[in-house]
Length: 283
Image (tube, rainbow, N blue to C red):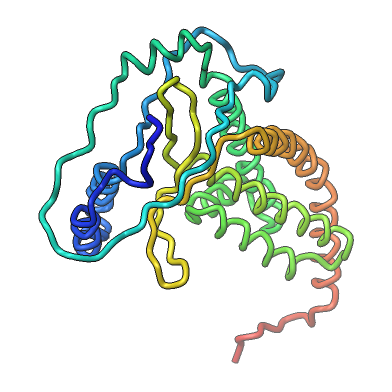
């Protein structure tokens, strides 16, 4: 639900939050830390009742019932002692759902765009297996093993970029591969915005803004949960990103034959230039 104040929590509550950070950021307690954050940050993340609308590729910005409400400021983390206060009030889900039905507000179109983002991203990222297969000159199971062992997108893209530098002699192909890596990195930033955030819903059932799930240190002042409005500009950016993902998928498919040819050519030149019967670490 929409808030009239920057935060509904007292300094004492946030002080308790800070006190618990040091003891709850262990690997085994990551889930507990997230639970504490969710309790202390007052965001009504209830979802409006589905009105039966189906999100399709033809969704428009006007279908999204955007709220004119501006983004809120991040929550300041105050210092000081004190005991835990009361928990936030439970949202009035029935009232929100009723207001959403009466106002025609629906999250279906926005959820459809986010679903499209997830679907396209996953399929595109899996294409890195084929790129690794070509660059490593190995089979698909081995390339998939490398892909899954590197469990972050950044690590996978770093490996692709570095292999391109040592495996490709053809400048045009290397530039095309670098372009694909840049596209992945740019789109991944948008993906993270929507996948690693909480969503706030106002009293009319409209999703008003997203809030990041991380601490931000700005000018020596800690805040939690930078907020961004779900406005027309943001939605148009999300639509562009989905279109860019479709275009990126085709770029990768077009690149693969060129990449394979360039790697084979470079390997044959390197093999012909290497003296027979030598090894760099031999005695």
